Image (cartoon, rainbow, N blue to C red; front, side):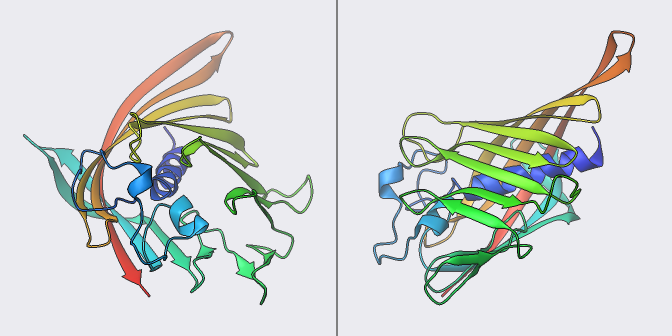
Length: 252
């Protein structure tokens, strides 16, 4: 598995899980909190905060990732992975200003989206105000173009994300148990330069803060890489990685 592919899996998983892991209390770390209970009771939730997985008057979220090894009952934290850092920022109205992919959102005085990473960046919301597409493409020859498409399930949770980059397309499928807001797993699939990838990411939540937002979790990624060797033959590589993610959340 290439470092570039691993980073895509990891960053996408971070962003997706920010979109699905707010909890209404510090109870139920096994994921048994239902969507209907996500609220801080003060009206501080917004479509963007909820879409990116936080509840309450959140202003900024910073996530860092540590290497981890399997212990007898839990993962053991190792070194900080300096290239596995993400940041989210929201304005006073609850609109996302920077998401965990690194995408930027600029609004006018009326709250209309005016630009993103580039002046030609486009963003689309559905009738409920949720972001469903973010596109950065100047023309067909732009090798820095990318496109995100977000799909929600009937309970308002992310169910599928498609990421189209100039070097390949990557799909994320999220599954849940019942009404839980914590996914059971995220399956990531894609292809790049003749290689096909499939990764299954599972999570264990360890800590939450007083607002019910998670602040620490364990991550296990099981990856299968199939490479085309030519002449109808292929090779397969299977790997497992373990990390611990820690979030610092700042509130208004």
